[in-house]
Image (cartoon, rainbow, N blue to C red):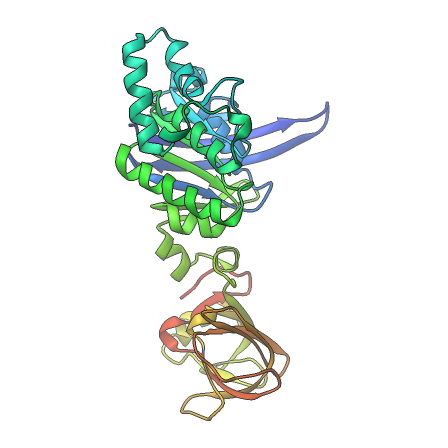
Length: 358
């Protein structure tokens, strides 16, 4: 296992004589020994480019990549001893046993040792019962397990996953997600996981680097990212639904949203340093909603109600402002008049540009 450290990594793709694309810009990250970290962001944000730089498939335009204290920029992917699992599983035209054994045989590992290692890794991944099967007969989930086993048998320094669950059905995705997390606990190898799916990142990773437009916007533990997003992008990108953001104007000791106001008397002096335009952010599940009036609540109307099985998602409109509330149990229906409260301990305040203040 190794610590992977990126220092001032930037990469420019040259697509023509005069066309250059800045894929990643001045990235500094450390992935600790035996950690499971995720690179999360929308398509085109630079996360796969960054993973390929770690692997040695791309060489950064500037900056340095270290495995522990060794700079690995001059080293090939083989010399870095990284294992990669891609979105589409690629298997050779031989049975599962031979696929797993292939990396060992390519470096002349003795056959008795090959047999033992293949047996051990097959048990670990859960493919013992298909060792004699040809990959063409396997479903996508089983193929990904075989790819995992083939990567594991090499005992790599670092595992790199590039959206490996994208093409699996929902049940297969859940099974593979559990298997990957179990493997990480058992083998204690540094793993870096690229995904655009925030549910995968939140459930799998110890730390998540949220990326947008080639930069790391925030790098934190999942709970911190979810509860204390650094800006509006992180707040909205994480969560289902994303964080509500409601824009208003500071007037005296309150932020005025038109049909309702939010008291900020305890932080008003700090807010004055940032002007008069602000956004409050609150997660849908923290909003209190009732059909009956209660202390501190303001009046609104439910315009959409979506039953999600274990909860109900409400679209609520107050004047010209709309936001979502997520409730486990409710009798609120579309068209109902409702009373709403934002618990103060769950509200964040952002400046006009969407950057977190409080």
